[in-house]
Length: 76
Image 1 (tube, rainbow, N blue to C red):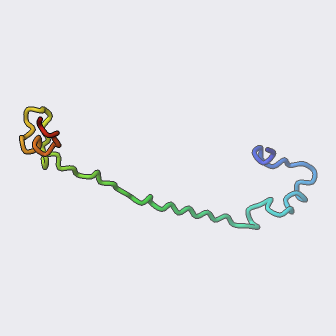
Image 2: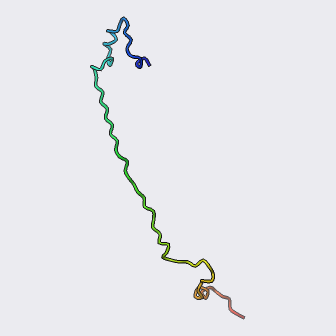
Image 3: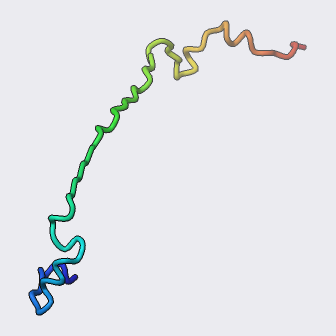
């Protein structure tokens, strides 16, 4: 917290300035930031061909060929 208010010039200020990292003449600061772009991924939805097979919704449209394939008990 005391670094936010600046340096206090008191009686031993010259001695304080001899401490390491007290001035910028003793070190250099280098900062490198590399940000890579996020990979772009796309997901294509599956294509359904809804018109390839039409299933009748009403029993009237069921063909007789289908009905004859149903097992029927022998007639007495």
